[in-house]
Image (tube, rainbow, N blue to C red; front, side, top):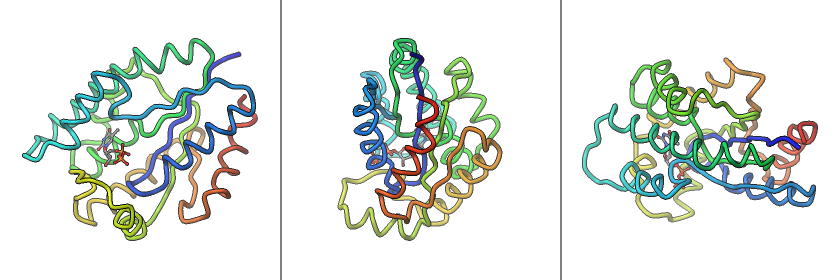
Length: 205
Ligand code: TYD
């Protein structure tokens, strides 16, 4: 049995965690061992880095921010993701390098190719088997986040044109790699989206 690596991408409030949980439940019924993880913060070092990138209230230089995410990613892939895939597990991961390209590249005006190359260097070129993009209009996402009443998050607090650029960044990435991406309309009901994800994953098991 070979491992399978699935990442979920999309703006804040697009429903990634819900879909990750539904997919994990279904894979368990298929007898697969599932590792659920996320970036930033999937490891002990990553949790420390997550504190800095998400909760530090002062200014963080754009390049410093990109490097912090890349550092989290390097640690995560080498100590958690790769070993899990080598065991034959299914890794379901909230966010990966596409988030860096969309947020640090499209959102923060760093060069998208450089940001992507930085992550590929950090991880020895590791790319997921499937990336599910939960595409959602930022205004709808904002309404969901406000309803959820979560604690302060530096990136979620960015202005709406930032989130529009992030969305466009994700869609451009998906268009460039149609073989890896499954793009879904995240405004659809969760159960319907979960069925579309299962249909994409099932032949790969
Ligand atoms: P996430 O864990 O999805 O937030 P939450 O648990 O609050 O839903 O993502 C945290 C934030 O980090 C999100 O706003 C996007 C941002 N991010 C980047 O800017 N670059 C990256 O490379 C990653 C992985 C996340």
